[in-house]
Length: 364
Image (cartoon, rainbow, N blue to C red; front, top):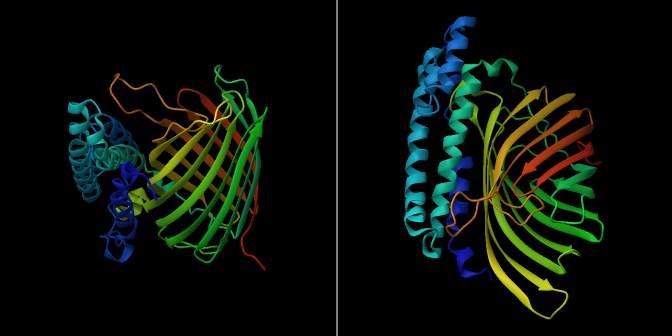
């Protein structure tokens, strides 16, 4: 059974599911005829407006680019994000992060995600990014990666790690295993999941929205700290095709994930052990390029609300209870069945990862 604090966060999973399962409102047959393409001068003005005053008034860039419909939708989404952030963040701020107000993260984090997404979306659309938009590579039946990770943290004795990752998909079912090891320190993780909505192996769909649920277990050994950590988690991750908001956002997506779990820390020097609950969240915005078949590139900027990874957590702005997770950027490029991926994460440490990948689009 999950700890009580984690159980109080379960409604977050319902919010994630509703976000991805909502019907599309930006289908081509329902959209009005596109307005004439803006001139280069107006496009430059639109990009400037997306930044100033667009950081405060979302949709300003689209408004200058004469895409008033998308501009209004971005402004509405900003309002929703502000409402969620205020409803969840004010109690946390007033109480100094008291435990009784921590469930407010269920509202604060999605609200922050909307505020970040609308800034990025307005800039992308105002700059005419849709003309570069592509289709992501469809999920493969088997995806295997071998790589290298560098950990920039003077507090730990290890810096160079070997990594391995494999994901197997069959229909809606997904299973995977991953791990890293080096200098007596290692971590292994296994996961089982299901795709409730979205493309399955070999499928190209015009709407790249998806909703996945997953349960996982991990074991980590930290020789430098003399401890072992066992973790069990359950969560959901939604990816929303932003073309649902407007055609100028084609090729971009937003991600929102939330999860709960439990963690048990065992100390090798003694028989003592500590247990705690986990609440995790993932917020991101990304874009795709290429045809999705012979060539594809997918990139994402994200925030991860956890600090039990190699990156750790950023220093919080105050000494109040709670913590700040880490930020990262990831990209994966495919050419036929071969690919490469890169990732950088910054928290209390910085982590650089590179991997070579191979995929089998369909299993025999």
